[in-house]
Length: 557
Image: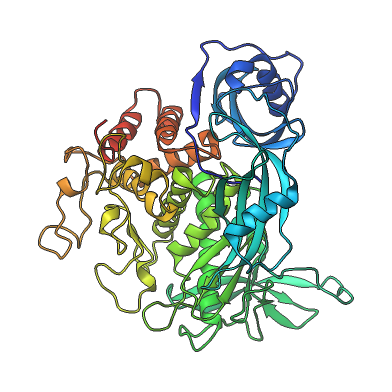
């Protein structure tokens, strides 16, 4: 698993011809390693580097995009990941985070225990496992440093698991970076079961009706367990995706939801299975969306399904993806203003965090954290449009279905105008070094919570897909009272969209092919322009539209 930290720009380096790798290399991975050795400047290669392949994409024309993690003298390099883009062993470009080849000592000055103590001063005493530490090379800044990565686990006040990572300078104990990312670990208390394992049950696929909270009456793929003589909420057609009930607790995985007659839920919260129906439906639609739109076979593209745990904690107004257990947990809301968080856009959002972790692995901090959140908003919204369920009409609002009292401003985020959201914190435009956006400077923007600085990428995607068109219900004369000029930052009210399908293909291509763990907004612009060129041609209308959409969400330099 890759540590997370504050992002630097991803530099895109071009090579007119590159250097050919050895002709006898046989696979994309071995060819990419040859390209790295032949192009040390472009790949920031040092004599002590080694690489591990994490993903391979091969285009129809034979261009290979190989994603790699780097080690230096055997230590993980935080920010050392890269993507090698080559064809027939000849370098085309690299997507690389690291600023220069590494040259530093890997002998620490302070002990691991000293690093744990330094991190513990910030975390406090409410941890539930013994803190862990390990040496890494921290290369997200211009001057790399030897550091300890220290992990503390516990539970936040609202019941959310917390896995707090700290990078502690191995020379002086200073905290270089910190982040909280539950996607990197298991739910607190999860462990091996005791007792004698049961024999493998005899199961057969089944189909049963479900009555959900949000999606209406739906058809579910389930299975009949002949050994237990019971139906189980397991989807054998989608990698054995299954839904558990965690019993309003927060430890462990919960219990697989079962039923005697293969009829699930009653459409109300007084039946605990109703929320599970929404979860099963949402997982299925998200799986089908990625398969139909991108040919992706499951979250990790390996055909393996995840599981969802409904009824997480008590009065928990949230949902989250945990990449460590390859699972998602859904709260029940507070029962007064917010319903269970199992609407389809939220499920698509959270599951898409798993896709991001399996591809670019965008760090959940700074600008890259915002791009991580935006990816989930974008893809969660596209899942909602893909499902096109009249009970959950698709739109560019995140989480509008979960509010008990419908209202024009009851939602979590508005992609078309982030500042319109309930928090009034997300800026509409990307601040420049000299020009703030909504009073937010660029320096402050880089340090914002990812749920807030994600708004600029959401805004970009909306304009790329739809253009400067105000959604129905938010136009002049409504409470929002928006006009086209309120949707753009540069006055380009004539901006025309290219449609959702093309826009999502460009974003997905950028995510899976060009983004690295530390991609920031400047690099995301370059990546999406390159992605549009790959898909639709250099100088195409679509590539020009990407540039115009970024211009429309950026403050003047």
